[in-house]
Image 1 (cartoon, rainbow over the protein chains, first blue to last red):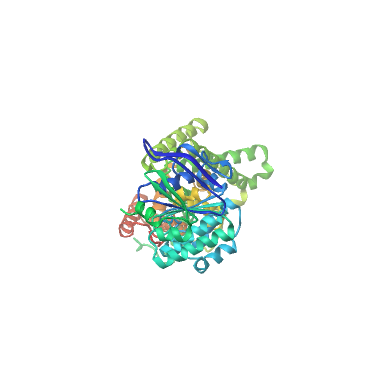
Image 2: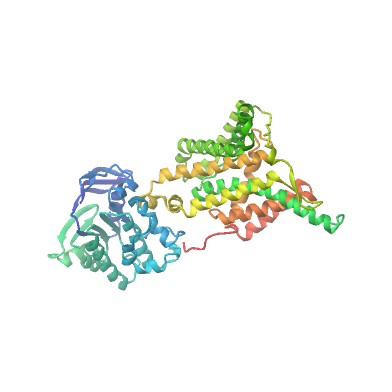
Length: 229
Length: 308
């Protein structure tokens, strides 16, 4: 579904990602683990075309998206929930979700999105900026789903969210995958969450993928070593 | 200063000055709407906004001449055609300017300020070269001349009423486009977070271009309205740009209601005070009041309350 091959990304002269190779199959949930500064967010931004790619390629279903702009990548089926949520705070909840409809061409917010996040239906007339952190996270996911994605990218979705809601979020992500048959790539620092949600766990260290384990045979202590400071 | 007038006189004066103020309000509001879209929504300080208005005024003048020369039978309706043409001409120029100049200068407000200031000088000279330095006036069709006689002392000019209805209509249209249409949602999303708007699938460059064009187009319509209350010259637009910025900042950028309220307050204060004091004293008092209010409320009259 999503194929990243030999991806190099640099800010000016300093290269941050040194040739990543990742393939994500349809319906798979992949967690990318790593400490701060190892390149998780840069990878996400490069996938969305927010940070330019130096060399290598990213393709969706065989379609090369490396040279495309963000909105064109969204049209190809990539959707993005950034770190810090980045919802449009002065717009209402409903309007926030509707911004995602531009890409999918829909008119009204699909019912199943509200079924997934009933709290958003309750608060649809509130301004996005006045929601709590957890609600904003749900809103950001709903907005991404409104674009009708094939691959959903989430950048540290658990950051700044209370533990009970983190477990809830893992369930929601799996439900989204099961109902919509889409692939999910989630970058994470919280190992328990990654183990909860993922089919496969990658570890990124200094801009390179150093481990790639299926969920079933994973050695937790080995992965945790890369996360502890 | 009120001492020399009887109570009835005062009422009539206030009514008529208030109405004169309403026409000024219309021009302010139309100008400010365009500027509020561009400045409030995109953060671009467009010093050439007055020149976009004057382009609309010249287009109106040309249309009126064309109708007089070739279609005298339809002259009474030329104004509607002129308005549409003014909107299209200013909008097209705006689109060109955004493409050639503004888009390279986003996030550099001071550079935009200088660049658009330069643009305004270029446009002024273009108008002078093409249309001549003399101011031109537009002939109004018969049905717009004259006035309603409300009481013995109060007269209300018909073209003023017409301009106001026009303004209300356009304000509603702009409000609809920005707040209820699909395109308006895209504009507001781009304004709040350009990168994120792109990442939810919005073509931000196209949105920027059409937003700028819309702002300039509305200025063009303001130019059409302007031909009824003043004569059009190459530098006429400059006189309005400062007042218009004042309206936008005083109302609170990015707030449509604020822009309307502030255009109303400023134009009414101006117009009523002008009758009793000299024009410059009226201006001084208005400005002092605004400075005072902005010191107490720097975000302007209206602003959204949202967690940052």
